[in-house]
Image (tube, helix red, strand yellow):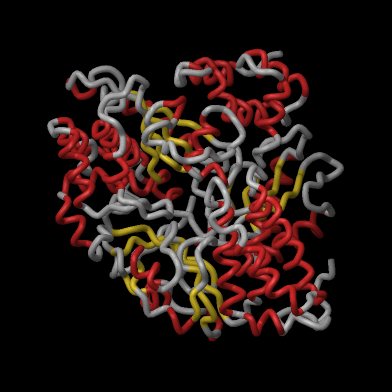
Amino acid sequence: MKFSEEFEARFTEMLTHYPTRRSALVPSLLYAQDEVGSLNDEVIAELARRLDLTELEVRNVISYYSMLTTKPRGKYNVQVCTNIACMLRGGEEILDHCKKKLGIGHKGTTQDGLFSLEEVECIGACSWAPAVQVNYDFHENLTNEKMDQVLDDYKKKGTQ
Amino acid sequence: MATLVSHPDEVRVISKRFGQGATDIDRYLQLDGYKAVQKALAMQPDALINEVKNSGLRGRGGAGFSTGMKWSFVPKQSAKPKYVLCNGDESEPGTCKDRLIFEHDPHSVIEGVMIAALAVGSHTGYIYIRGEYRYLSVIMQKAIKDAYAKGFLGKNIFGSGYDLDIYWHGGAGAYEVGEESALMESLEGKRGIPRIRPPFPAIVGLWGGPTVINNAETLAAVPHIILGGADWYAKLGTPKNGGTRLFCLSGNLNQPGVYELPMGYNLKKMIYEVGGGIPNGRELKAVVPGGSSTPVLLAQEIDVAMDFDSLAKAGTMLGSGGVVVLDDTTCIVKFALRTIKFYQHESCGWCIPCREGTDWLKKTLTRFHAGAGLKKDIDNIYYLAENMLGKTFCPLGDAAAMPTMAFVKKFRKEFEDHLDGKPCPFEKAGEAVLV
């Protein structure tokens, strides 16, 4: 299977960083997932082949890391932190608000495939709580109104 | 981009380049960058280790172990390559400090790794950054590339004849990987399951080679110690607790933020002066002083110096510097439940006491918070937690047990108020969620 040139360059270079090929696995999985959308059978087979691993070994690693997924997510994965620091400043209300607004629950995806929703553990934004990550972008010091704005902006961006 | 804050009581060492554009290598050089490593190249490894030992620098990841001591455990001679591994898998709830270091001063971490490598005779370093911090990985990868381009990394660094490579490595979402042995497993491309110790990583670490593992903030402090001297750094803090640290103030505060304060700064002042006190006219109820795994302090217990030893004396820990402030509207049972939900989610399941303990605690606390608890559950919660303590390969079990035991011990009355089918006294009527 084919990845982008950027992926290939990164992957080839990364292999030179470690004494074992396997060490490149975790970051490679995440970069592959970002490109393909999920770690489907084809991606797993390809990375297993390249890193001299069995497919089972790769799946075994995937199931450990919470960012890795074998199922496709929406174009924008809305990850709402409800851990202690966010909880104290309204993280749960933000999650409820997103559920209502998007009409989906935890790990759900909207029918148009634009949004997924996920309740996540601490994302390292405690001093700027409540916080949400949409894919890799942080949105902090949120209120329901600001959250609406964030979602509307992504919706606009995604349907253009 | 996280917002920066400031307070007159701050002593800026690690954060002195924040907001100064130091991600740019030329700007970093203008701000005394890469001077410490050049000084270190002219020093003997033992002198470097002693300097860091004498500075009183202790691990900023949470354990508070002497950094110089840790380095001294690495054997001088080794048949296998030695490694330095920077732990940037910051994920302890309440902690968001390494994020600022990577965002504003990535070269200080690289320089810290370089000095650690010189001290222990290593030629390879890794900087591991959690997967969620993608924008910081981009910053760090560029910083490393720029350092290579200047000849600061690679073969014959600064014309010294010393070869040193440093690489970025990324995670993919796992709290446990912040534990040193799980971190190595992850870097080796495996599930982050902890290793039994001994042997400690200083003897048998990455790919079997001796390995020094330090938190990103710890390593970022090292260049300042080498340039400013051990005495200067030690005197910034309290005895045996050298220097400053980044305190992440969060929760019910008027001015939450990451502030750099001297070790031993008074917690009460930190909350009421630096953090601006409790908003909305509410009262302080409790403080989690060093990340979610540290036992809670009551409002009457906060007149305490924020250093490793003073907090140990107070029955808790300085941990990772995450100060989470709870006002009097917070339900402790719910807070305990949210804490344990996290540890249950993050437990890898390798050690049975942690796997089963966190699961039962979550179930019991969920039921309890919903008003279906029994009186004996209160002791049962304590008993379950106590039976995880010290019985697991890595400290995740302890991290779940310690706060839980403190919640029960210090807030038993509040647990009792949830008994007999009563709705949670802190939830508005009709909002209590039944399981």
